[in-house]
Length: 200
Image (cartoon, rainbow, N blue to C red; front, side):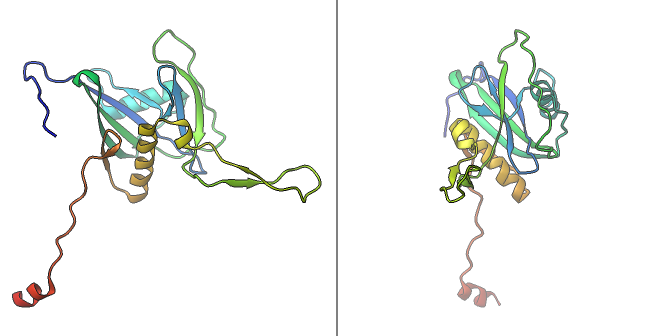
């Protein structure tokens, strides 16, 4: 898509770096910020002169108390905001953590936005069955849906988390634009068997 850009006033560009933190069950750690409507991956904006990996490490430690190191770049996403600004988001895989790891939210320090809560979310959209503990055992089972990214994240954040999981599984970088694949990978051209016979 062609955009009209004033060369004397190029669009503002920001760098945002997040971590895909998973526990041993594959649940994804998300945080809720006071100025956003849903949960998102822990992370934040890079300061001037700071690289994306360093920004991710610092912001995850500040928001959750966890010390993590990037293992693999999973997602690069361009998001076009109001007034022509462009945010490039980087999502990194980090080492899995135990499900009972302690998450320490930061104390309010007057900065904005502040982290108000955290939640472990799953991608599994199936219901799991948890029978009643009460008697008699013949009572019907209760279907309980585990907290899912689709229920607690914005649509854009859920798309980004799903893309990060797919990228980690495939061992391939996902490139997104506003939550969707930036482009379709080129397919190999089909060769007509008759053409192959003529070349030989």
